[in-house]
Length: 438
Image (tube, rainbow, N blue to C red; front, side, top):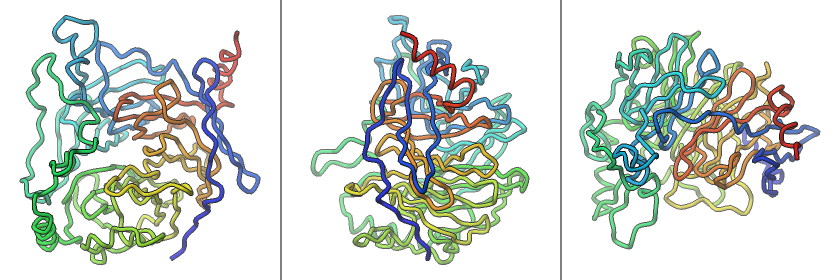
């Protein structure tokens, strides 16, 4: 097992915010390298039409034309944010869950679908949405055209069934995007995943379910965290959150299962069903993926699986052979017990041919880390916690286009998308000049 861990290069400085809300990167430099430099673009997106207010962003994808699809949660909105539906305020109304934004920032399309987590867009105009399983939609019509098989039951004891858009009463929203994440009074049931009155009975039921549906089960068993498409190979990579995370590969057309693996390249048959194998042991990371697994693959055929709760990235081949591990836990920070809000969130790549840099979204520290892809060393960061343009409050999703522009999507109180452009690009130079105007 090869590990590349260098904690001495972590950033300790906060992000400087320039004039006009322009965000500047904080670079460290490693072995003479410097991180990419980016500017926050305040003119993207343009005002969203129809008085829509975006909910928490759970999917973000750039299509073949460098336009952006945003998959959001309309149910995150509260009564206060839906008063336009009652014509008592200018703001706001529920949006469709899928919104299409062009390079200029203008909304050019949309369709509504059950909300979920994870999303990809192919070159033919089909969307693959994570809705407990992966469902394929025609973006031109919003029609469902297929789905990946899922077990008939869930680990929680519930039955798996088709997801639908709930009946919505105008002006009536929910408790908001953070209610399920807030600490509960002692003895109260927990919002995310629940907490059985008898923990021993819950653990026993979990083990029985895992024996019934072992790690080798060739279909989705849990829920979806990430979807990525390898169109030349006609393959779809899916992060199924069962057992802390499994990388599952399916045929893009037939949805037939092809292969899968877990942490350290474990074959599916090698993945442990024991909860203890998903815990830190002293300073040693878990033997299996811990929680909230996302992934992306590079142009040279390597898969980067980010195990957010364990604050690490595993690099494998597309066949699942383990290559290396990058740890992403800053010194002096602790792993929050029972939380999956770690530093290793979404994965994107720099636009150069060699894809020299990894861009990692960090929901815990609300920043983007720039890593040297070869050895995982941190070179710098972009953004900090806050609500101003160029800052983040619930940094969740990250994507990049062919020009190297970075797009981000936020949950919690953020609920927005933002764009950052390379400082040396024509757009970046223009923004720099504008920021200097007194």
